[in-house]
Length: 335
Image (tube, rainbow, N blue to C red):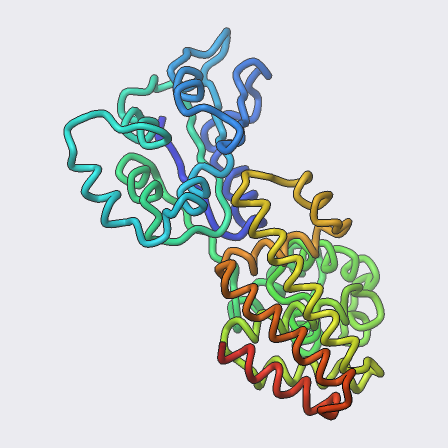
């Protein structure tokens, strides 16, 4: 059976993995023929031995490996595509997870191998190695009009229709956190009970509205979009939040991003990740993880110290709070 690499947005990855299992007929396998391992906590040779084993009293053996490609990201895999390509031309055996990539053509036909990862750099050397022998499914979270269309279609699958202003409102509040969007659309569809989901429904029922604006603002800052970030933060101030509170929220988010980056590089996975970060919300953990993958630790540190400088300038009376916040956002977006 073909091997699969599925990576990208965790919600879409989970959906794609379910489709692969279903299409391979792996949903009804005995527990003894179903294996899910975490790459950072496993030895490649042991996983390869499992993959080479024939199923016991069944038609297939399912082996799902979580975080294989991420091991290359945390060990310098970014920008190492050239080394990966040159290594693939070497005649000698390769070590680590590369040996699993090389062994795929020789695996029993009964083995269903599925590699599951989050957001991964397309230049990842392991990704390139596995792509030679696997079906690759990149699952990118929708943005812009694509996100609006996803929200509309997801509401329809739940038996509801949603107005354009409501789509815009929930997209601004939650961003493209598809797990949260799916859950909130389920709740909104039940609440609307046959009528169109309205913007007022979204603002009344969807939690995280203020925190989501902070996350969205940090996203805009990292993407170099200070105008969008300022619009979101101005909305928070209009709702009564002080600039010092907003700066504290940005500082908290950068601290969570730093923790997420450090913990994932050390191989910590959910749900342990959330506990160590001190975050009880899956929404917060997923957003911090997504942002951590897009920033280096020196970049996080630089932005964090700039936030502390802005906080101090306000408390010492050297800058007007609103002006300080505006300068901070402009600096961070251009850093």
